[in-house]
Image (cartoon, rainbow, N blue to C red; front, side, top):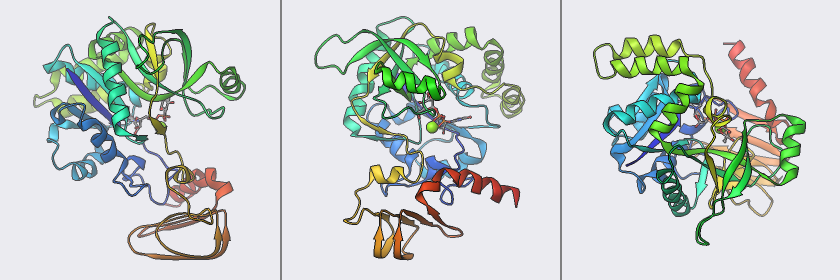
Length: 355
Ligand code: GDD
Ligand code: MG
């Protein structure tokens, strides 16, 4: 059966002041259509029964996530006691899913991407699940046509074609998976035209990913098995805390994807955006006639190419501004030059240092 796992433990600081430690990107409504994690779950709901959706997040986010999904049973949201990146999150999810369904196929996805239209995503996942079912150890990924030599994504090199019929999206055996290459390598991959960006969405049999983790990360796997052994017993919380803390953090991309032999990539037949910063809002919303992206009650006079966002009805007035980001929240307001957006990380560091 098909199961879905939503990874939602990421921190994220680039959306300050909307994002905070207790409210990272996945819990934000950046487009006015609900929060990113709500959109993720909605997109999965036609594919898998809600009883087969598992959300894995950090302990501190369990409650805010529960509030966004009052219909999900408490057991469907797992809160990790500390942050150990995506490999342990995925390994634990695979063990939990396998308890009731040893033949489970899982679609694992981030909680903080914009994907549309839903129907293309859903048919692509059904097709991908079919490719997983027909092969012993196959992992299926979704590839995005790269737009520049990004250093923040994994790269997937196309091998031989696996496209079987003309109605299916282009599909290839993966020749190589390389997580977040730097400078020259990223440029070489981008310019070669043979690589996709990794979308971060994976499909596999639970037993395939468990075998791969056991092989490539035996220590991590042993800790995860110990957690699974006590799951549902009075020792669950204590064992989870102890064994999870003992794991060395690693992402699934480094732990498994760079080593696994049988990986297929489907060229994503849907629009995908990882919404990395405030400027991504310009790609996701129509601008007004002066090039402003406005998600607020706003009056602009001689204002162009700005991004304006405010919670609630708060009125923002801009006069003689261009290329500026204004984000107003209940207790903090950002006014920043668009060109300096990357430095928001530094702002957050400074604020943290000042307590
Ligand atoms: N439960 C849990 N625990 N979830 C986590 C953790 C963790 O410790 N760390 C990250 N996540 C969640 C994030 O919330 C996000 O939804 C997803 O896992 C991916 O983590 P990121 O930290 O955002 O990864 P990335 O963006 O640097 O890289 C991954 O995604 C790229 C596409 O956006 C990789 O898979 C890249 O190869 C890929 O290109
Ligand atoms: Mg990410």
